[in-house]
Length: 288
Ligand code: PD2
Ligand code: ZN
Image (tube, rainbow, N blue to C red):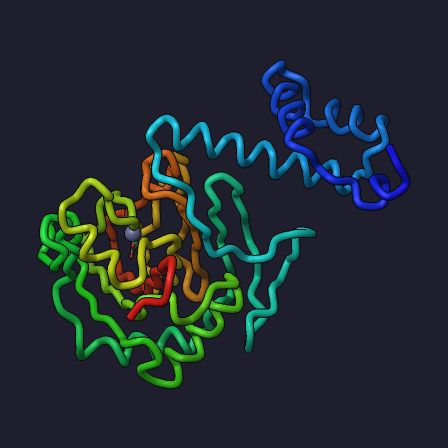
């Protein structure tokens, strides 16, 4: 290796091919890294080369088997496992994080006063919740979703604006890519049956929906009012249930509109008391 190559350490297609072959032969990531370092590669260059090569290889395989291509997704900065993240005007707690799929439970995303204010602003405007009618791209009443709800426009009032900026900073995703905040109210017996939040590419109405900002790529469910029993958010494929604790939130992202993301989720029936949430859906691009 010449001295200039040592400085720059250019990762060649041959090296990438070799990395893929090592993985296919069943060698561990540690063993491949060690081999690269002992033949003169700097550790950071080797790690980066392995990560990008193997990610690219998996993505190629996924698309070759018919999956939609992966999209960029919002994500909090969880490098170094922080206990808190400074999100604009508030220090948000990181309570739990799953890597694949990315599911993060945040604590204290909203103050008790903010939860109350959102409920009071939403209450007079509640109507039976609709879901997107994927056949047509319009909206319809759906027996799977028995809550009532309303949407705020983006930036509709100072409280909504503040929360939107907080989420944008927390998840490193532009405010403009967010749909309007939705507030939902569940009474005993009401629920939101398991579903995916992305738009199914096979449905005829989806191209129309995608014209306004592309796919959904992430969801934040914020708990505003605690039921006494029931009403958790459930992820059946993960066997995970998130408790609807006031001020907390669950965030999850999905890099392709496909069940392989394992982001099927639902709102369990409320058994006693009332549940209030605010949902923020995040799109690929600016949502108009
Ligand atoms: O209320 C919930 O827990 C819930 C569950 C599933 C909300 C949503 N989805 C949603 O708003 O997308
Ligand atoms: Zn949902």
